[in-house]
Length: 96
Image 1 (cartoon, rainbow, N blue to C red):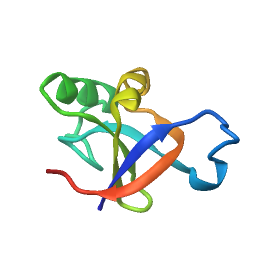
Image 2: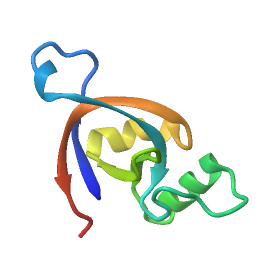
Image 3: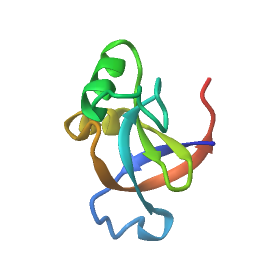
């Protein structure tokens, strides 16, 4: 299942009811929920994104992958490989 995070918000009171918080790891679209065996998560993520992949949010507990919008792509770079909490609106989508 792939879910798109359509916007990232910092405690916005306007859309609080329609936003959700998701905990996961900033990874890449090439690896999804798991990185290459024996490779550091940050290095693997940055290498795969440099090679054309996109940053994603990997919820390993629920086995879900969330794609990130353009603004979130830029923000995600500084958190590559790390566990994060993301707040925003999520909608079900698919990789094309």
